[in-house]
Length: 334
Image (cartoon, rainbow, N blue to C red; front, side):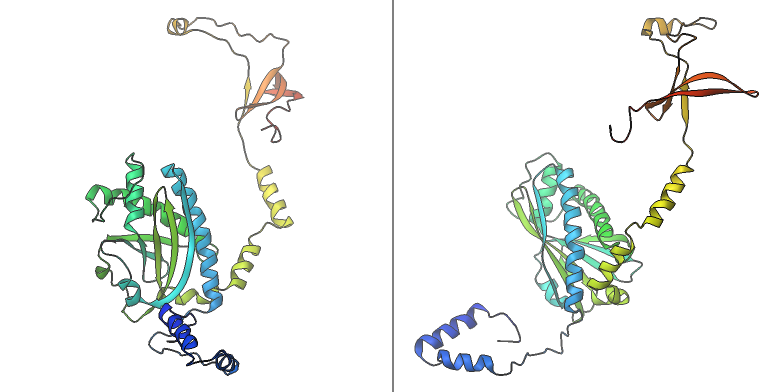
């Protein structure tokens, strides 16, 4: 194997051919398996991300996929299914060579982190979204083409919402303020790092209506280097647990809510008039309310009637005295 843990189809065919011709026996293969295995290491593309960091990135972007799935399903009113297919590390040149031309590539910054990040969307997915937003069934064109000016404006709006989901998913690790710089269609014009620099590629499989395609997020190692210590499962879980409400936090929140000022309204009464009568009102006209002198008045909080009361005076100020508590509008009923 050429430095890989997974056999290619040609290598599998060679092994089967060797077994069938007798060049290699099954016993020899068993002996070879028991011997010490040596893994080839390529110094031109050293691994920058540990397995734990790759796992953390996978978990982060699983949350991103769920948020993006919810947004697109509600916005497009169509069937949407997005999930993380893989998280890999490779050189930037290898990633760029794998992209189709034309494609839709968004270049944005992960501020406060330095450097640029790529979000590449398969043209089938992009044109399916555009067709759906323009009132169509969501079918991609027969042949990929560059975006028109109007289509680019629509895509920028969708990408802005996508970055909001990206920010929400990453808030467990760092508070991001991403900013979109440009949209490119030719991968060769998106040289954000040197060709041999290592990047991590998060690949998401997307299905929107009848269109299927991939979404790739390319994050250079240099961008994530300042927060590499936070990209661990232990840190991520610990930060999640730290944000859970404790009894002390709940009590502090309750005390703040109890000190919150809310407006209340005492209704003296009401009357119904038609539009003709309303237009005929003049200064000095008298409207007779339905409330009688001996009736209790309503106390309204928000839009709900919460109490009944009697009007009066306290010192030199107008006041009301609570006579009844109305249960309608409680949290349990709502």
